[in-house]
Amino acid sequence: MDMKSQRGIHRVSPACTIPELAREITSALVGTGPSLAFGEVRSEMAPANIALIIGTSGTTGLSKEVSFTAPALLASARASNLFLNAKPGQQWSLFLPLTHIAAVNVIIRSMELGTLPVDLREHEGEYPKVDFTSIVPTQLFRALNGDDRLLRHLQGTQAILVGGAALSPALRAQAENCGINVIETYGMTETSGGCIYNGQAIDGVEFSLNDKGLVQIRGSVMSESYLNAPELFIKNDGWFVTNDLGEILDGKLRILGRADDVIISGGENISLTAIEATLSIRYPEIEFAAFAVNDIQWGHALHLAIVGEVNENEISQFLEAALGPASKPKGMHFMDSLPLLGIGKVDRVTLAKMVTHE
Image (cartoon, rainbow, N blue to C red; front, top):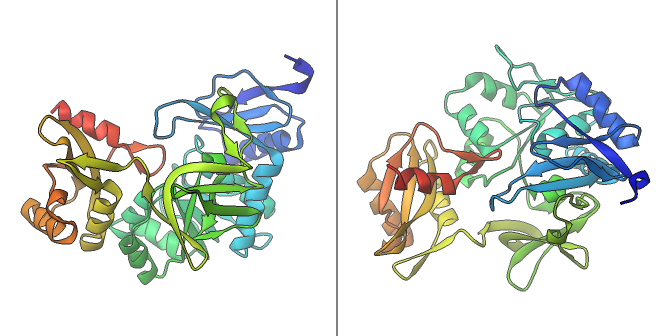
């Protein structure tokens, strides 16, 4: 290994203040400082062109150290601000944990506007007014269902980015009826976070569907590789193939769900995403997560985790009428909160383990 072409890696503490972090990010982007690592990153050295690494397990449980060059990170920030028509001097607020690319994006976007974001991760009291923020659907749900100070904060923005997990049409409509300008984002760590806004690619990004209907993305925002497993980072003619099924209508991308979220129960195919989306329309004030449990009779048995109060028979009857008899849950489990994988994504594996150990 040529050490002259390498740079050291500095692991960033989640408790790092925004001014400190801005200085470290600036040094990493211009190349005068070490590469910055967020989340679980075990590597000690990175190629000289790598400014930042995000450790993520994704949905497979495999630890990946996603590496980024400065041009990719800056392209993402500038394209986001351009889409939002953000002006110099405007400001973002930060609600997301520093272990995720979405939080780093907020900081770089603000820096590109000549400001620093307002750190609201541990804030007490009324939230100050800002121009933009980035949250996950769970946070939007809470704002619309009891967290009045967060609701007022979101209502006072020019726009909010909502990503990290699927945003139900019902939740979006509820937010817009409350005067919130919602921009639904789609992307992943490998694409420097959200790179498709309201179904449209941001500047420098392209999307298409491959022959299996999977979404594929390429462009200036793409990460460089997996630092700890470069052989797993595969691009075909520059396209990064996701595990999400999609369709393109009038030039806009619509995500249909993950290719691996379809279970077979009693010989019938059931989309977990479709179950959740259907329930969110009927019960917008309730949180649902559909998941599968291994079952000797059904192969996979459909179960529901529920946060809120609702009649079980009513849910079964509604799903049967909307999606057919196979969509009736074999079990329902009421919880105080849903286990999350990363920011916003429900951890279905943990739900299944919780149920089998009840």
